[in-house]
Amino acid sequence: MKNPNSLLKKVIILFIIVLIPLTSFSAWYLHSQNVKQKEHQLSGIKTTNDTYIGHLDTDLKQIYIANLNILEQDVLRDLSVMYNSFSPYEKSMWINLLRDQLSNIASTNPLLKSTHAYLFDHNLVLNSAGYKFGSYQTLSEKENTFYHNMTSNHGLIQYYINPETGKYELSVFLAPLTSSRPYAVSMVISQQELKKYMDDNISFPGELYFFRLENGFSLSNIPNTNTLETRNFVFRHEFTKKAAYEEVTLDGTPYVAFASNTSYSGGTYIRLIPTAALMPTIQYSYFLMFALFVLIITACLIFFAGIYRMVHRPLIKLTEAFDQVEQGNFHVRISPAESNDFAYLFNAFNDMAEKLEQLIEKDYNQKLLLQKAEMKQLQAQINPHFLYNSFFMLQRMIRFDPDVAQEVASALASCFRYITKNSMDNVTLREEYENVTNYSYIQGLRFEGRIRIELEPLPEQFHKIPVPKLVLQPILENAFKYGLTNKLADGYIHMSFLTDTEHLIIRIEDNGDELTDETLKYLTQQLTATAISSSGIEMSGILNIQRRLNIFSNYKDSLKVRRSDLGGLCVEITLRTNI
Image (cartoon, rainbow, N blue to C red):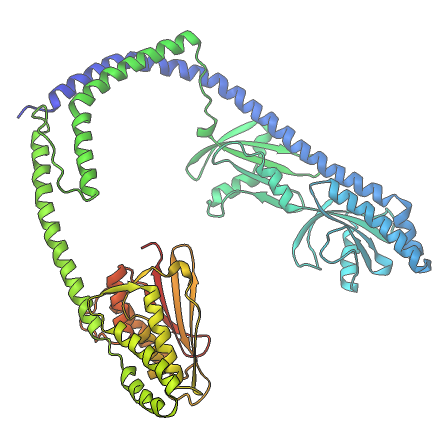
């Protein structure tokens, strides 16, 4: 056999000879350009960070100025001093005027969540529009004292637990610079909008950030799973005094760290960008780029032409043959190779496909015959017990109510004709439903006064779904025999239909009180075992139906049981609607 590696070695050697000088020159050029552009890019990012966080600091300062403007107006002072002397109309007028001002500020500043004015002498707080506690509310002594104490830190952004909601809030509190501080204005900053502002500055994949105020408030997208090394670094930013940025390695990943500080809010913003994401694209001149492109394409064409001729084309042929086998076509064969390099492999594939075809055909036929035999055996176990009792009932009705007896005889004949159609393995769901309707009619007469049966209409779009014969009637019969045996009155059986995009669920439930938790647990275990195999299990009743549905649809969750909301047993049959 010809050595398949000989030509491949020649092509590889030629490829290396051509690419080594080209690669060396490209590496040198790319490195020199990368150094220059990296410095330029890092300086630009530092400037962008300072500008971006500076805008945030300006917005926070604007909130402080807006707060100060409200505080210096006569409206708030007059309300605080003369509130008790105002008439109800005057109170309403002044309160609405102040609330409109608070609401206008909250609606025009995207960073604000809500605004509030506190009248401490009256235990009263006025809220901006949209606040969940209403336009105004009375404060408890404890809440009033808490907010009054917060005014001691004049003008600072404060981070605290709101006594009304029990959640942390971030707000600017302002009060008059007097010892009593009878009133104050609070503007609550939206932490969600603040986080969105930080997230909007993310420009690189894998980028991390950390923002912290002096009051203890912080925002970060650093995962909690990161090591202590990362957490410690974001709290240590002395490098900002030495350089505009610092290259660090955290948790095994190299980053470039930038830090910016805010003057008004006293915040620190640290941005960690993966080094790999910052590598700039080298700019080529048109002539050099074209020359490199031609050389690389030429070398690649020479290399891949040899690879394609020697390896790729035969591999494509082999792959296509395997795809055919995967799709079930075991008749596929590969014609002899043009060279001896792949001849042995092609012949081995042909032998494999032929033997696989024979084995699968034999196994499939055996499995099909076994499933049909098991289906026939399970259907034969269905024993229509109610027929015997129905004949006795019919005999009595012929004597006392011939008209009803005629209807019962017709329904009974339909049931018997349906059950004795041994030539039919599967039927439509409509036929199965009609048989259950006849069965329910007969049983309803027989147990009239004791048990009531309610069948919801079968949706028309599911009439033609194929199902194994006699899967619904035995479940109803099981409810009569085991669930409602001791029900002397108010017995109830209900059948309903639930649908989704791919399944139809038939639910049959009763209100019997015979079902115990131990019985339900045992039945569930038996159904789980039957879904896999019926070997060693007595196949009767619901287990019979479970096994037949599994064989029919190859779907292990075809039948489930649980305790019904009515108190008895609930059986759910799941049918695939796309069969």
